[in-house]
Image (cartoon, rainbow, N blue to C red):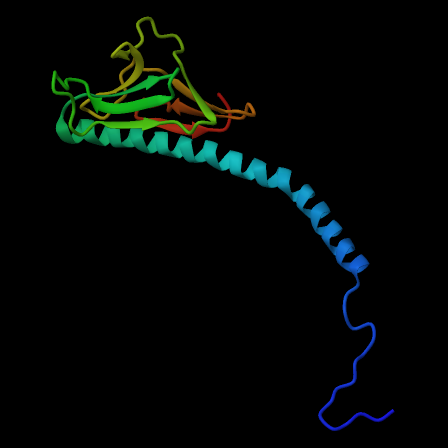
Length: 173
């Protein structure tokens, strides 16, 4: 059979069948279900690490501000509400205009661990880290802050050996 000029000949079998499309979709569902748990672990870990870095940066800012202003700075932690704040120790009745108040990610919890201190530092009835005007951390400040996510994974911010600041750790020790 001859076709007129300009007409194309239809080829059988050139299109996908319904069975082939269903098989491809089934393979995509299987691949997605295998990758989803790994992706959720990645996102969860990012929130924990990001919060630990944010808290460490606030600690560093507190030390820098204590040295530059020549006055003690306090980073207090409200473990129940998940808030933490950096402000001048002698902020007075008007408060500290440069205070930085932050809230934890909703999937995280924070705990303050005082190791061997007789009278831990408190500020506004909350456990606190006190940064002195010479850049050192007060000897009665908490030695460890623990961040924990909803799956039980943790990051610790521990006081370094020279009492000059805190560092992020993957383990408590």
